[in-house]
Image (cartoon, rainbow, N blue to C red):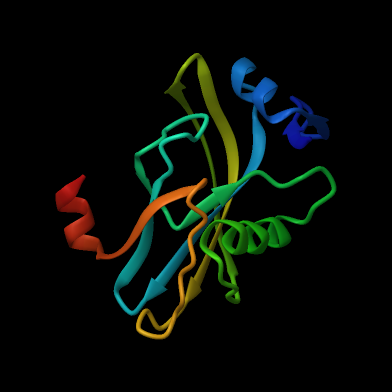
Length: 145
């Protein structure tokens, strides 16, 4: 169960796929890890329920019902990429996007960031979640997009 946000801004639990099928506003977290001016990005595993094989931020997830957003971000970083890092909260954004297969991401996203030394960081990506990772400078990332 993930936290969905009602019109009165109260939270209620809902299954993740139901929230995406109905396009209901729900909570999410997004993590960006930097090494100097480079950002760690990941290519989602092909078998993901949406956006498989696409490049994305370092990682993202939905908090579980009752789970703090900071804890969800740390959990997912460990689950997907196999490392722990001190994460700091940044902005909150809200967006809505159709992601294929009749699914809609309508999320209020708490962004977190962290810093690491890419030469010392041991990334142990879970192949069920992540196809590959790489470090990119912002300009190179913008040019590639």
